[in-house]
Amino acid sequence: MTEFDYRGENAVVYEENGVVIRSWPAIHAGDGPVSFSLEWNGLKIVIGGDTFPNKWYIDYAKDADVAIHETFLTPDQLVQWYGQSPQQALGVGTQVHTAPAAFGKVMAEIKPRHAVGYHFFNEEGTRFEIYEQVRQVYDGPLSLAQDNMVWNITADKITERMAVITEEAWSVPGTKEPPKPDTTGLTDPLSDEMKAGAWDVSDVLQGLVDDFKSEHDME
Image (tube, rainbow, N blue to C red; front, top):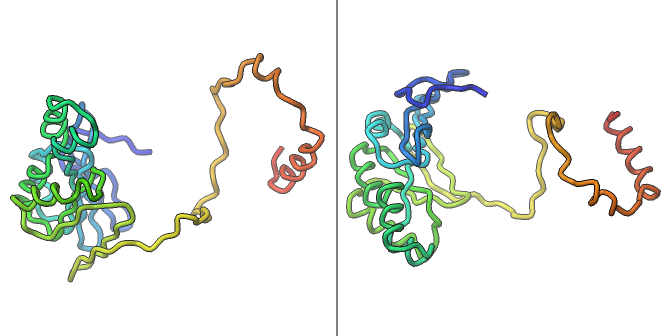
């Protein structure tokens, strides 16, 4: 883990193997959120995070190949789908988060090669109104993100596509061995009263436990 000051403006927080990641402040709920840019191989991707439109994003995302920024549900949608009061929906939708038209204004200002709006449930009841409000202000290349959407980014073109996946896939080995659990300082969540209610099945499990520990070199 690397700690850095969230107030840093376009500050380098990672630089290795030709990859440079920069950070600048974002505005959301309290001090601390940040936006990032990732620069590699002559390309720049900006990830705004959860944020209200702000001067730092405008300044440091202008040369982005792909600019990702939240575009939230409209106040009407917050009332209809979230059950919020009109007063709450107006505040959440236009002051705490980035409304679709405000997202459009951000992208019209910075003019990325490709804009990506996210941070809303992208489905039939939401996407059309959000798209229309964005398009009232911004007419450039645009994706409204959804799960498993992929962008192939080169110097020549940016292609949006959907990944083909199976929802029944098992996990695959990672690049590192999984870490051993650290139980330091943890308290037992079960009381003695609950433990006393356990039924003894050690006669059928002890052999399995011993074999497993031997196989995985566990003490």
